[in-house]
Length: 210
Image (cartoon, rainbow, N blue to C red; front, side):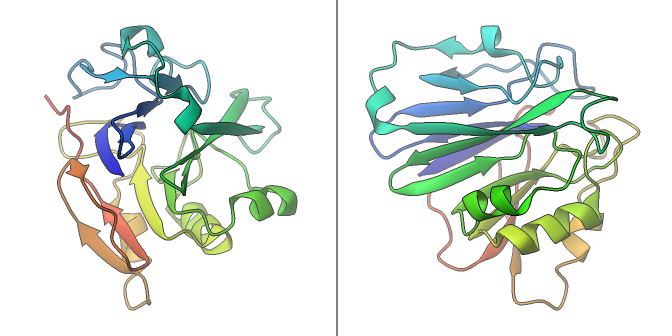
């Protein structure tokens, strides 16, 4: 499995046969500091309709010749902690490919239920927002990771030195919560070809920084 962190909450995940799924592509100009996306995928999964997550028309969508190789599901949650009254609904995207489960939490702003935790438990990859303000914050994300206990955690939806919304925190606050623990933090580039065998946090660099 190959994973590319395009930026913000957008990822491109490719299976060993070349089938590609894109999570939450952003619309041009919707996120400060990011260049326009330039990717192709067989399927696009959108967590909700905000501009920084719903740029599916800007993804070059191929004829889905690999659709039988993906199992795609979703869990309905909320974009805030008031049952959607502030920011509406959010969908957690779940994809199974190459025998592994990849979970994208979208812009989750609430805790998960015990039933949802059971579904997500021990997934292979968990992409989770950590910047706060519009979503759960670093501490809440850390606690959610402890509940789900995935093999690999990838933080997203945060502010960097030259990109992201000013109101968001950076990812360092989230990464620091793993200091001294059993889960190693691994820094890598924008693409990883093979997932680590050990439980870890992957601190990836966005691909489309201006």
